[in-house]
Image (cartoon, rainbow, N blue to C red; front, side, top):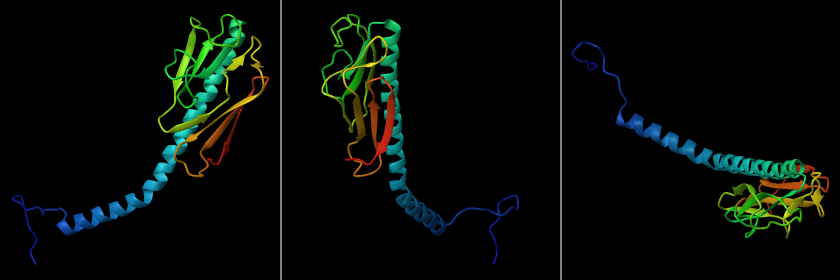
Length: 175
């Protein structure tokens, strides 16, 4: 049995069509097994980053309330220009210039956070307000967030806000 040689006398190396097809088949099987796990990792990372964004937004509102000595608030907003949406649309932080606990046109908007599409966020019926000492105006509240299609997976996060302004995050199964 003779081996093929090139012009310089060295052996030619390469893959046959059969070897290439077997390699592609093995890669397809590995990808089919790994894809569901990878999807779970992506959803988990999205939930973690979104809940961190909510915590940072509430912390910003609280620190602004203390800094300005008038208060601040967080509300559901679609575009970041008014408190006009559902919590799943996004969050808007504003400086409460007149100290009434409600957003009024002309008060400075400090931050707007839009949530990823397909994300469910549940919150209180009213805006979340902070007084000049960083305490919650009104009762304790919570924002619950999860992907829309998580089907009883442990991707639900509940960010609780106590009356003193303290934040806590806990994990749970989707509902």
